[in-house]
Amino acid sequence: MCSLLGKVILELIEFTSNANHPVTLYDKSDFDEEIKLRIIGGEGTPSYPSGTPPYHRSLVEESSSAVDRGSVPAESDWVTSYKVMVSNDSHTWVTVKNGSGDMIFEGNSEKEIPVLNELPVPMVARYIRVNPQSWFDNGSICLRMEILGCPLPDPNNYYHRRNEMTTTDDLDFKHHNYKEMRQLMKVVNEMCPNITRIYNIGKSHQGLKLYAVEISDHPGEHEVGEPEFHYIAGAHGNEVLGRELLLLLLQFLCQEYLAQNTRIVRLVEETRIHILPSLNPDGYEKACEGGSELGGWSLGRWTHDGIDINNNFPDLNSLLWEAEDRQNAPRKVPNHYIAIPEWYLSENATVAMETRAVIAWMEKIPFVLGGNLQGGELVVAYPYDMVRSLWKMQEHTPTPDDHVFRWLAYSYASTHRLMTDARRRVCHTEDFQKEEGTVNGASWHTVAGSLNDFSYLHTNCFELSIYVGCDKYPHESELPEEWENNRESLIVFMEQVHRGIKGIVRDLHGKGIPNAIISVEGVNHDIRTASDGDYWRLLNPGEYVVTAKAEGFVSSSKNCMVGYDMGATRCDFILSKTNLARIREIMETFGKQPVSLPARRLKLRGRKRRQRG
Image 1 (cartoon, rainbow, N blue to C red):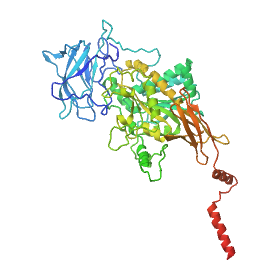
Image 2: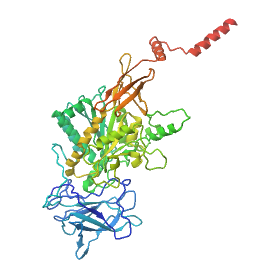
Image 3: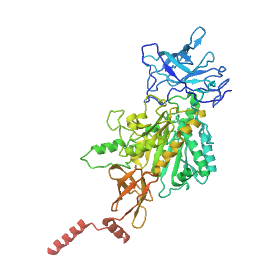
Image 4: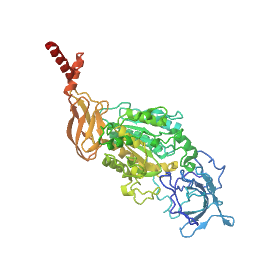
């Protein structure tokens, strides 16, 4: 039995057509997976993570096979038959034969179900060429494919696994189903009981608990002055790389804290970290049935009731922009903490249970920064995710904090091993190198009701989407390399929660003032203090005029300098009550209500008239 040795990058992938018809691979707006060329096995029959593959009882010894992965889900475009040619020098090509003639491989008859074809005899090759022969009527040529086989060592040892990445971290590199994920969390909690806590934020449609792990030196409590950070993964159940990266991160933080890694100890002691590895466990359980080899574009993507969590949040952008466009009307919508519309909160609204759980979670905890891990690309997307202009599908739509978001995105992308590498092959048709591995979400493709936009407009949290790999569902043998690709970025991004300013807004008695508004001059987006009066405001280096105001208090402003060194600048405020607030406080203390002065004057005038009469 040959083990699953993972992906070998072939030097050349070609698609050709004899017909006068354009060869369309696919478009990112249609689906998120690249053509994956995967070499599986060694000698003999390939072994699979879930036993014998469902598509065939046994495989011919040492044979390679091709899995036609279907086509663009939204279109009727798929190849119904094709030929395969192989080469070892990219100049001389040999067509796969079936007896004396060229072998015609059957393609898809339905766009979602993968089709497996086997070569008639084992073949050794470095390059592959796929030649579509027929395709769905009225459609285009569109094909996704994986190559399954066993890698052979190169005698010159140049091409053979030349890009292999090894790791020294002693972590559990495997795919974890729901039960295994829960067990791994328990193991981490038992290893590091003083800094971890397992809890759940709610349940999925199928009743699976949405487990999260908190990592902090005082788990279970919000410490005044300590920022809160979160990672979320698995909103799309079939994008499993993010889920496994977060499980690896849990293990890594625990191990490094126990080893007294200074950087990790500081991060844990100064930050309250929350990690939610699987927001859509129902979808994951469905996706893992197909596994990394036969999982389709949509299998497990949505929740059990067919909802895409990624754009299931309330559209607060439209409320904000409509209010801003009504120049002469009194402003009823603030530039932050925009209320969720009543219709969205009704039981009949099409809102997933998982979405409601995340909203309640984010309203309960004063998150400052968050990242949601996704798959199918290598880029960091920052808000806004929704275009402002009507009828446009793509348009750069920045937030008032665009410079901050661009820095946050770059902090992840620049420390990733591949995102900013100009030499790497793009995942699909988009090349994000011009923005150093980052992109404004709306300039890529517009999404109404995204988590990023909702988080920014309804809470204090700055949220970004981090696409951690071209392959949504890589084989577990690739997890060590993917971990090395993302490990430093995951840590660096968490550290960004300590940039900008922080402080506490108190009254004259030293009591924290909750819901005080923190405004930065020149930035049309405010934040609010937490229940203890503490706040955190992400800002790039520079000097800022910051104002704190609260109902019943006199506002206060001061200059706050943000430096280049890591660590937020302390910027506290003490607010005194307004005269009217003092009067009300005194009258309430003595059991009386404040006197309405206009009404008192009318009473006095009435008395004088009666006296004259």
